[in-house]
Amino acid sequence: MKLIDLGYDSWFGSEISNPDQTSSIPARVITVNRDNYILKNTLGEVLAELTGKLLYSTESNIDLPVVGDWVMAEYFNDNTFAIIHSILPRKTLLTRKTAGKKYEFQPIAANIDYAFIVQSLDGNFNPRRLERYLVVVNQNKIEPIILLSKSDLITADELKEKMSLISEVTDKYTTIAFSNEDGENIDTIKSLLKKGLTYCMLGSSGVGKSTLLNRLIGEDILATNEVRAKDSKGRHTTSRRELIVLENGALMIDTPGMREFGAIAVETGIERTFADLDELTEMCRFKDCTHTKEAGCALLQAVNEGVVTSDRYQSYMKLLRESAFNEMSYLEKRQRDKKFGKMVKEIMKGYRKH
Ligand SMILES: Nc1nc2c(ncn2[C@@H]2O[C@H](COP(=O)(O)OP(=O)(O)OP(=O)(O)O)[C@@H](O)[C@H]2O)c(=O)[nH]1
Ligand SMILES: [Mg+2]
Ligand SMILES: [Zn+2]
Image 1 (tube, helix red, strand yellow):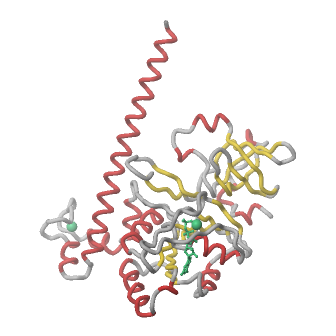
Image 2: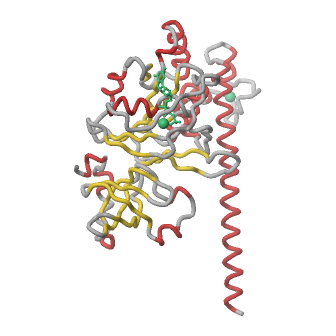
Image 3: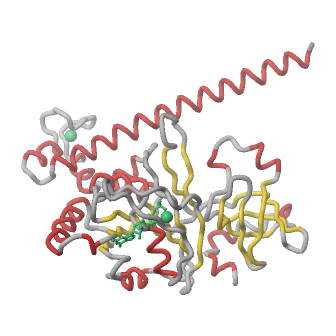
């Protein structure tokens, strides 16, 4: 296996000729465990740990390796163990807001080319949730592909209705309804996968991400689990993120289903996902129009005329508000952290003097 088969390309190429890292070689992070990593490159797969320096210089989660990262690693003991010295710059980084009240970025996966956003066509189907995923994926300049699973559970008429709801959200991205159960459109999904490109599965627990991946592999490698019939909720079967090389050479990252998919600072993602609404706001009479009550608001007019559904308008406004609020909270937190750091330094200096 060559590095190019693992997704390495000239984009990363210029980064490895760093003279003081000559003992290190590039490798891709294929699994992140609690205390260590599994790397893969031409030497095969190896267990790896971080250098103390990297570990202690990290200011946030973002500075630590995630699945899909390219790292520079030094190999030991006949290439049975490695130490990670640094992370190569990331082509793309998929992040979300850390679940709960914390205002932090949580990295999900790095160097992703395409994200499969998976929703099942039964209880999990939700156009508003799809918008949220699209915003985050678009923010990171990753190409979304929309997959609607469990088509075997609904009638042809229901499918038609749901597809039209999706086309109301967006008609820009490939959208495929499929079934792991009867095999519908599995081949269509297979035909999308290209050698050397990295894909990642996103979506709630229980929608069939791992089952699909097993289907694509043609073997039951990943654990899957029953869903509670009552509310279509999964049980978080997949517990870690891992990268798998498919037979045709495509690279696929499975992720555990996420209960929350919060967003921080995703204005660009919102603009891209709601491009038509964003364009309308350019035509508002006032530059600082809040699109809530102003006369001459082009967006409100479009809603009144039925050009834009009120659901999409509300979703757009909600995501903008949430993104701005989370960004402010994040920046405030960073500032507090910095001040705190400074204070600690001052105190330590004082100690040393005495
Ligand atoms: N009827 C039907 N059931 C499916 C389909 N795909 C998956 N399932 C079932 O849904 C359940 C959950 O599937 P998983 O693949 O474990 O779901 P997941 O998205 O990986 O869930 P997490 O790992 O928890 O995020 C399993 O019992 C599957 O057999 C499908 O297309 N149709
Ligand atoms: Mg899974
Ligand atoms: Zn307006």
